[in-house]
Length: 51
Image (cartoon, rainbow, N blue to C red; front, top):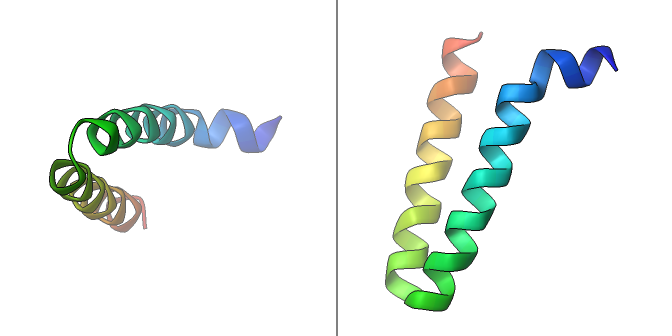
């Protein structure tokens, strides 16, 4: 449970990103790939900020 409490914002963000990526992928392959790459960049930035 401690893991969940510490990482809840990240896990929720990941869930939202997955939903967005799936929607984007279904909508258009190029847009989906763009969204995924942006999400990966944001995740890397967040993990870097958190140390």
